[in-house]
Image (cartoon, rainbow, N blue to C red; front, side, top):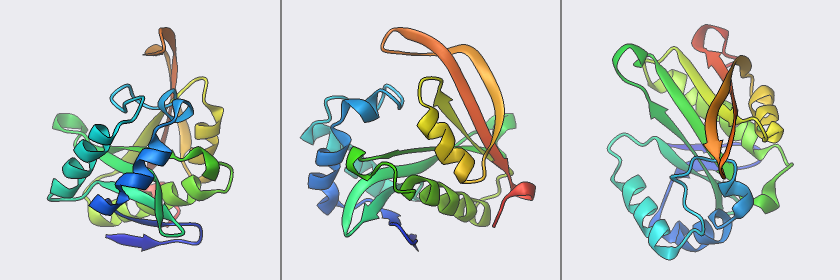
Length: 175
């Protein structure tokens, strides 16, 4: 899968992305707004492990966000199971030097449309840490709507906070 957009390209990760992955993922500002499983500092071993995992995916769900030929961020889907199997979670990050350009909103919008066209899911959601209003704006600009505030549901850097959940459903999607 490769999606060519106005601001970026979304494509599968490649081994040749290692240098740019290290440069852009090794950021405290990114780490503090994503899940703890995203390492910090982000080492060469972490990049190798991620690229091996992404390359091995039979059905790709994790993609690079590419600007001017360089992988500067990531975006992907996590599919739920059991009674939640009609739903997927979207996650994303973007190198700090590319913030504020509308890249992430465009990538979220495009991956959402692709996911609805490709998979038998009915909704896609994302959780945002309460201290990260910029990520909430990304989702709103991509057509997601506020679905819930999960009070004191997450912890990051020893701070318990709310998680704000945004979602889009297939029937209401914009594409």
